[in-house]
Amino acid sequence: KAKEKGGNRVTFFDNSFGEQAKRRFEIEQDLRKAISQNEFTLYVQSQFNSQQILKGGEVLLRWIHPQKGFISPAEFIPIAEESDIIYDLDCWVLKNALSLIKKLDKRHAALSISVNISGRHFHEPRFLSLLKTQLDSYKIQPNQLTIEIIEGTLLNNIESAIEAVQLLKNLGVRVSIDDFGTGYSSLTYLKQLPIQELKIDRSFVFDAPKDNNDKLIIDMIVSLGNLFQLDVVAEGVENQSHFDLLQEYPQVILQGYHLHKPEPASEWLKKINN
Ligand code: C2E
Ligand code: MG
Ligand code: MG
Ligand code: MG
Image 1 (tube, rainbow, N blue to C red):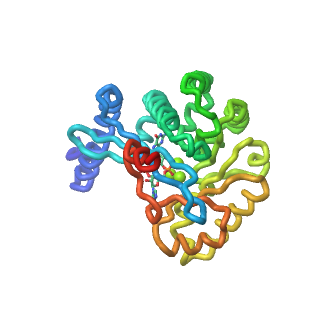
Image 2: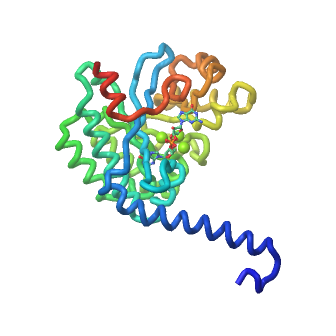
Image 3: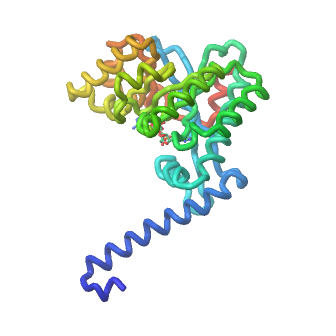
């Protein structure tokens, strides 16, 4: 068909487009069985304060596909989000994160475990009621759980977002805005959202040592945090220069490869409970 339209470029385009569509389709199909086939693992990346004291960890999903091998959540989460698979996936992660919290040693009662929840369904009553049921059955302190929502998706429907965040707050769960600075939060929205935390997007951290504009954005987010009494987390602290720069903000919580690379939750737990 491409040939009829003439030209190799058309053929080439059609093929690579076909390849992409095929991979996408296969991933979507395989995602449906991946939970029952035990192909997912939870990883945890530690978070530290400026004195390098452990403050918590972010749970990150890893998928080892039986044929395709490792597939990044950056690839499969958006595919899951376009179908209803994301609901089962986030429920699975939530359940396992709560079981992880349950297994934390008593002396770690002040740590908070962060879980990424897709903005697509976090407004849904069934998600909130599942969360409530799970919190009751695991009997954990609800403030040991932090729900991260990406700024952009949170703002799709601000009225319903305010309501959902309020419900989470009523449950005692912490709420964090992930990738903060990449969406379009206005001060009016921030003032209305009963959140506890802002996570500076790693793109700002990445360039801050050489780009003063990114440094100024970090200044601004830290100031917002102070103003609204929110915790501020910097993600993507990848090297010494990022770490040194962030020492200027002693209240900021640090997360990144420079401090700790994500590791399987079971190993992380063994290490910190030891
Ligand atoms: P995110 O929530 O912003 O997570 C941070 C990402 O940055 C993670 O990528 C992490 O491995 C990576 N990272 C950590 N430290 C560094 C660093 O120093 N340098 C660099 N360059 N990267 C660093 P990951 O695990 O590939 O996850 C990508 C995204 O996928 C996450 O971004 C999150 O939006 C989504 N995601 C991951 N797990 C889940 C999940 O269980 N549920 C949902 N809904 N989304 C998830
Ligand atoms: Mg996150
Ligand atoms: Mg992020
Ligand atoms: Mg991200």
